Image (spheres, helix red, strand yellow):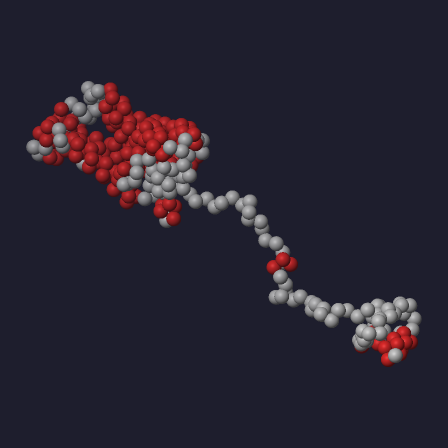
Length: 298
């Protein structure tokens, strides 16, 4: 009875609403809310007691899903590690990339060239003709030997003058290249950076090869070759000039032949053999800086 009276009062208190009031069973008492009594609800059905209005979200309370999405990094390329993915030694160039040299490395380049000069004279001193030339007045014999420079051919073998000496010039040029931060990663082609670095390498090669022929610590001063008719222009000219051609040829072979072989096979021994076979003077220059012969700075 009390429930029926309460429903009638609720209907009278909300005139003009036009909504029908659901008649609840007499056995389930349902208290009215304050909003229903004031006529603010469009429906007589009260909201569930377990739900509460959600307060507005603040900037600090906003979930990550509502924030502007960042750039999608799933398809971004991996950062360049600077190593050679095909390098047999696997990242031998990493220390140099971590601590790059800003300018040309004059000290290591001079040390490597002096080491090569010591190897050359060490081999010459094993020959009896060089040992005999050590006797006598040093400076007088040295100046006489340099003054004898005049003719072209020294009577030596073709292989010595036109193969071994160009290889010597190329090796000296690669000493420059491997100590030049820009030049050692320059790839054979038409770029100005490549040819500028190789021109400097040829100039370096010419200076050191000339020193070996007629300089203070040379064949003229230690071996006195000029006193025996061996001080000629063929060695002074062919060593740097032929060395320039040899150096550029090795760069071309490294780009078009060696790298192609490396893309064709994963065999470590084949890659090592290809690098040492097609770039012998570069491999020798690597030894002068105590690196593996097949090392690459790329």
